[in-house]
Image 1: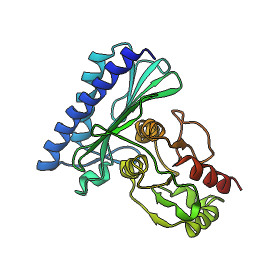
Image 2: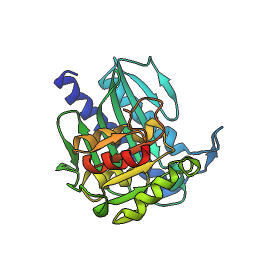
Image 3: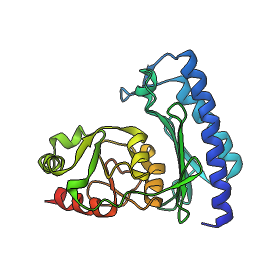
Image 4: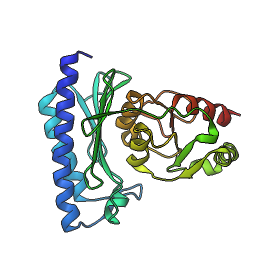
Length: 258
C-alpha cells in the first residue's frame, strides 16, 4: 500500500479509536442496559455508538475503503481496502465492570492485514502497528521476547472451549506441563503482553477475525508469529489463534500437529 495512504489511514484509525474511547468512558461511568444478540452474546448502546463514531472518521479519511464492523456489518465490498472494526471487544467484561475490553481497528489490503490499532481506554493502553514500521505502545517501540525453549515459556490461554473437545487438548496439556508458567489474561491483554515481551505464547480456539486482526499486525510487527492453530495465515473466516515468539510458535505448532 502507498506509504502516504498508510500514514493517513493510521492517523484516522488512531483518531477513530480515541473517539470510541470517549463513548466508552461515558457509558463506563453511567452504566448501560444489556441486550442479547441472536447468538446470545451481549451488546450495549456503548458498542453501537462507538462503532458509529469510528465509521464516521474512517469513511471521511479513506472513502474508497469498505468497512466490516461487529455491530453494523459490511458496508461496501470484500476485497480491496477493508476496515475491520470491533468497537468494544470484551462486552462481557465491560458490563461486569472489569477493564479487559478494547477497541480493535484493522485494515486489510486484499488478503493482507496492513494496519492495526488496539485501544484499551480503561486499562490505559493503546498499541498500533503498520506493515514494515514496527509495533508501538503509547509511542514507544516494542519487541517480543527472545524466548526459545518451552521450559522458559510463559503461556496465556484465552477462549478454548472448542479445543477442550479436540484431539489437541492432550497436546496442549503436555505443553503446559513443560512450560514455565500458565496464565489466562485473555482478550487484548495477552496479545499486548506478548508484543511487549512479557509473554511467549497465546492460544485461543474460539475467536472472531474482528477480535484479533489488529492484534495480529501488532504482534507480527513486534517480531512475533501469528497464525491460526493449524499454522495457516489469517483470513476473514479465522476462528483460532496460535501466536508467539518465532521459536516457541514453531515448537508449539509441531506439538499440536502431532
